[in-house]
Length: 193
Figure 1 (cartoon, helix red, strand yellow):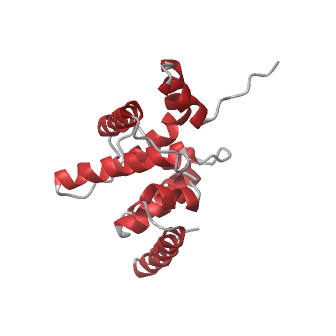
Figure 2 (cartoon, one colour):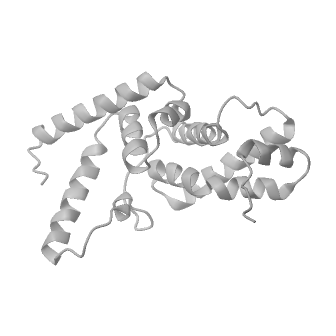
Protein backbone atom coordinates (compact mmCIF):
# COMPACT_ATOMS: atom_id res chain seq x y z
CA UNK A 1 0.00 0.00 0.00
CA UNK A 2 1.34 3.39 -1.01
CA UNK A 3 1.80 5.90 1.81
CA UNK A 4 0.00 9.19 1.18
CA UNK A 5 2.07 12.27 1.98
CA UNK A 6 0.55 14.69 4.44
CA UNK A 7 -0.11 18.25 3.33
CA UNK A 8 1.83 21.12 4.87
CA UNK A 9 -1.21 22.14 6.92
CA UNK A 10 -1.65 18.58 8.21
CA UNK A 11 2.02 18.50 9.22
CA UNK A 12 1.64 21.87 10.97
CA UNK A 13 -1.36 20.55 12.89
CA UNK A 14 0.61 17.47 13.95
CA UNK A 15 3.55 19.62 15.03
CA UNK A 16 1.20 21.82 17.08
CA UNK A 17 -0.02 18.62 18.79
CA UNK A 18 3.57 17.78 19.79
CA UNK A 19 4.82 15.66 16.86
CA UNK A 20 8.38 17.00 16.33
CA UNK A 21 8.90 14.72 13.32
CA UNK A 22 6.18 16.66 11.48
CA UNK A 23 8.32 19.80 11.64
CA UNK A 24 11.34 17.86 10.40
CA UNK A 25 9.29 16.63 7.42
CA UNK A 26 8.13 20.19 6.66
CA UNK A 27 11.67 21.54 6.71
CA UNK A 28 13.03 18.70 4.58
CA UNK A 29 10.21 19.17 2.08
CA UNK A 30 11.03 22.84 1.48
CA UNK A 31 14.69 23.31 2.42
CA UNK A 32 16.13 23.14 -1.11
CA UNK A 33 13.72 25.72 -2.50
CA UNK A 34 14.14 28.12 0.43
CA UNK A 35 17.92 27.75 0.57
CA UNK A 36 18.39 28.20 -3.18
CA UNK A 37 16.16 31.30 -3.08
CA UNK A 38 18.33 32.82 -0.34
CA UNK A 39 21.59 31.72 -1.97
CA UNK A 40 20.56 33.24 -5.28
CA UNK A 41 20.52 36.67 -3.66
CA UNK A 42 23.34 36.56 -1.15
CA UNK A 43 25.87 34.44 -3.10
CA UNK A 44 27.57 33.40 0.14
CA UNK A 45 27.03 29.94 1.58
CA UNK A 46 27.62 30.84 5.25
CA UNK A 47 25.34 33.87 5.05
CA UNK A 48 22.68 31.87 3.22
CA UNK A 49 22.87 29.16 5.91
CA UNK A 50 22.49 31.80 8.64
CA UNK A 51 19.46 33.38 6.98
CA UNK A 52 18.00 29.92 6.29
CA UNK A 53 18.42 28.97 9.94
CA UNK A 54 16.94 32.28 11.13
CA UNK A 55 14.01 31.74 8.77
CA UNK A 56 13.10 28.40 10.31
CA UNK A 57 13.71 29.66 13.85
CA UNK A 58 11.13 32.35 13.12
CA UNK A 59 8.79 29.72 11.60
CA UNK A 60 9.13 27.52 14.70
CA UNK A 61 8.62 30.43 17.11
CA UNK A 62 5.53 31.58 15.20
CA UNK A 63 4.07 28.07 15.16
CA UNK A 64 4.80 27.52 18.87
CA UNK A 65 3.28 30.86 19.83
CA UNK A 66 0.08 29.95 17.98
CA UNK A 67 0.34 33.02 15.73
CA UNK A 68 0.47 31.12 12.43
CA UNK A 69 -2.61 31.76 10.32
CA UNK A 70 -3.45 29.53 7.37
CA UNK A 71 -3.92 32.33 4.85
CA UNK A 72 -2.28 30.59 1.94
CA UNK A 73 0.46 28.16 1.18
CA UNK A 74 2.96 27.43 3.93
CA UNK A 75 5.92 27.68 1.54
CA UNK A 76 4.89 31.16 0.41
CA UNK A 77 4.79 32.27 4.02
CA UNK A 78 8.25 30.78 4.66
CA UNK A 79 9.63 32.44 1.51
CA UNK A 80 8.26 35.81 2.66
CA UNK A 81 10.02 35.36 6.00
CA UNK A 82 13.28 34.48 4.20
CA UNK A 83 12.87 37.47 1.89
CA UNK A 84 12.27 39.83 4.83
CA UNK A 85 15.28 38.48 6.74
CA UNK A 86 17.43 38.87 3.64
CA UNK A 87 16.26 42.49 3.23
CA UNK A 88 16.86 43.14 6.94
CA UNK A 89 20.41 41.82 6.64
CA UNK A 90 21.23 44.08 3.69
CA UNK A 91 19.65 47.07 5.40
CA UNK A 92 21.86 46.47 8.42
CA UNK A 93 24.88 46.26 6.15
CA UNK A 94 23.81 49.52 4.45
CA UNK A 95 24.83 48.13 1.11
CA UNK A 96 23.53 46.08 -1.75
CA UNK A 97 24.50 42.41 -2.04
CA UNK A 98 27.73 41.51 -3.77
CA UNK A 99 27.12 39.23 -6.73
CA UNK A 100 30.19 37.15 -7.21
CA UNK A 101 30.43 33.48 -8.01
CA UNK A 102 32.25 31.64 -5.23
CA UNK A 103 32.43 28.21 -6.79
CA UNK A 104 29.85 26.70 -4.43
CA UNK A 105 26.78 27.60 -6.40
CA UNK A 106 26.26 28.78 -9.94
CA UNK A 107 22.83 29.01 -11.47
CA UNK A 108 24.27 28.16 -14.85
CA UNK A 109 25.43 24.77 -13.54
CA UNK A 110 21.76 23.80 -13.68
CA UNK A 111 21.66 24.07 -17.46
CA UNK A 112 22.33 20.75 -19.14
CA UNK A 113 23.55 20.11 -22.62
CA UNK A 114 25.31 17.54 -24.74
CA UNK A 115 29.09 17.32 -24.55
CA UNK A 116 30.19 20.50 -26.29
CA UNK A 117 33.66 21.06 -27.66
CA UNK A 118 36.22 23.08 -25.70
CA UNK A 119 35.54 26.07 -27.96
CA UNK A 120 31.76 25.76 -27.45
CA UNK A 121 32.29 25.52 -23.69
CA UNK A 122 34.41 28.67 -23.70
CA UNK A 123 31.86 30.58 -25.79
CA UNK A 124 29.00 29.37 -23.58
CA UNK A 125 30.90 30.36 -20.41
CA UNK A 126 31.56 33.82 -21.85
CA UNK A 127 27.90 34.28 -22.78
CA UNK A 128 26.77 33.14 -19.31
CA UNK A 129 29.26 35.46 -17.62
CA UNK A 130 28.10 38.35 -19.82
CA UNK A 131 24.41 37.67 -19.12
CA UNK A 132 25.06 37.32 -15.38
CA UNK A 133 26.89 40.65 -15.31
CA UNK A 134 24.08 42.31 -17.30
CA UNK A 135 21.38 40.95 -14.99
CA UNK A 136 23.27 42.54 -12.07
CA UNK A 137 22.72 45.94 -13.70
CA UNK A 138 18.95 45.68 -13.41
CA UNK A 139 17.14 47.48 -10.59
CA UNK A 140 16.86 45.25 -7.50
CA UNK A 141 13.10 44.61 -7.75
CA UNK A 142 13.31 43.68 -11.44
CA UNK A 143 16.41 41.51 -10.97
CA UNK A 144 14.80 39.66 -8.07
CA UNK A 145 11.66 38.78 -10.07
CA UNK A 146 13.70 37.76 -13.12
CA UNK A 147 15.97 35.49 -11.08
CA UNK A 148 13.08 33.85 -9.25
CA UNK A 149 11.14 33.24 -12.48
CA UNK A 150 13.98 32.20 -14.79
CA UNK A 151 16.48 30.54 -12.49
CA UNK A 152 14.18 29.06 -9.84
CA UNK A 153 11.08 28.50 -11.98
CA UNK A 154 8.84 30.10 -9.36
CA UNK A 155 5.38 30.99 -10.62
CA UNK A 156 4.33 34.64 -10.82
CA UNK A 157 1.63 33.94 -8.24
CA UNK A 158 4.27 32.65 -5.80
CA UNK A 159 6.65 35.50 -6.67
CA UNK A 160 3.87 37.96 -5.84
CA UNK A 161 3.34 36.23 -2.48
CA UNK A 162 7.06 36.07 -1.66
CA UNK A 163 7.73 39.71 -2.52
CA UNK A 164 4.44 40.85 -0.98
CA UNK A 165 3.16 42.58 -4.14
CA UNK A 166 0.23 41.98 -6.48
CA UNK A 167 0.62 39.52 -9.33
CA UNK A 168 0.29 42.42 -11.78
CA UNK A 169 3.21 44.18 -10.11
CA UNK A 170 5.31 41.00 -10.31
CA UNK A 171 4.42 40.62 -13.99
CA UNK A 172 5.21 44.28 -14.61
CA UNK A 173 8.59 43.97 -12.92
CA UNK A 174 9.41 40.98 -15.12
CA UNK A 175 8.31 42.84 -18.23
CA UNK A 176 10.47 45.86 -17.35
CA UNK A 177 13.38 43.59 -16.44
CA UNK A 178 13.28 42.04 -19.92
CA UNK A 179 12.88 45.44 -21.61
CA UNK A 180 15.78 46.86 -19.62
CA UNK A 181 17.92 43.79 -20.25
CA UNK A 182 17.35 44.18 -24.01
CA UNK A 183 18.32 47.87 -23.77
CA UNK A 184 21.48 47.01 -21.82
CA UNK A 185 22.40 44.31 -24.35
CA UNK A 186 21.91 46.77 -27.19
CA UNK A 187 23.80 49.60 -25.43
CA UNK A 188 26.74 47.34 -24.60
CA UNK A 189 26.63 45.84 -28.09
CA UNK A 190 26.58 42.31 -26.71
CA UNK A 191 26.14 39.48 -29.18
CA UNK A 192 24.29 36.51 -27.72
CA UNK A 193 24.05 33.56 -30.05
